[in-house]
Image 1 (cartoon, each protein chain N blue to C red):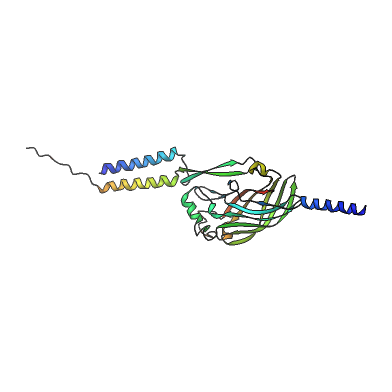
Image 2: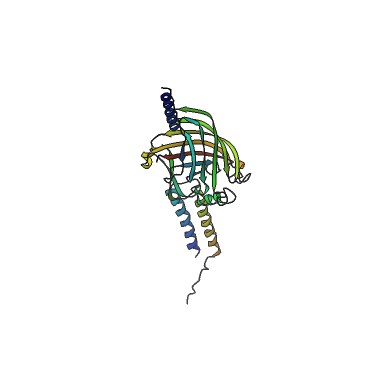
Length: 89
Length: 203
């Protein structure tokens, strides 16, 4: 159980860092949309077009790190199994 | 002969009056092109957002640009920032309070320092800005471009377009937007950039 929790914690940590890096390495807050500016040819007004897209930010990474640390800490609650000594017959 | 001259003058005066009539432009834009972009400083990253729920009416006389009057309204619920929690707070009672104060309104009373070159007029628009139920007189620089007969290109109807642009700042403390609080997290000064076009169809 201890090992399982530690592996889970490390997996969570690396998965969050990897997804953060792949999805833009955004050093700001997590975003659920991205705004692009387009040009209206008649009036020459630049106008926003909002696209729904998940972009994890620093808060996402910190939350994942905190969760990983919690799970890793929980692993200490589960002590090592006592070694069983087989008695020779 | 005198009667002929008098009649001619009447016709000329009527023609002049008709051609110089102020035109009413409607800024409601179903295409969502009309927008305001806002920006304010914050510690982690600057807060950048948009608002597209623009409406309002402005009367503009191409012969007398200085006589421009009208009001522009922004639907507070249309204000958008990319972080969903930040957006919820922005619309909430401590900040913009969209439920109780659904609109931001700027009523143009007069233009000053009017300069016209071709179809473009720059001026200072003096008017009343109302945000979150609080009103203040403001002096906002504007650039107005009159696009005669261009409505056809946009909507397939005969008519004119009027493009209004402005960059200005407000202080959230002037309008009771979480006044004096969280200034370490959200700056007091908000920069705004307005780009809107009104249409005046000719029936």
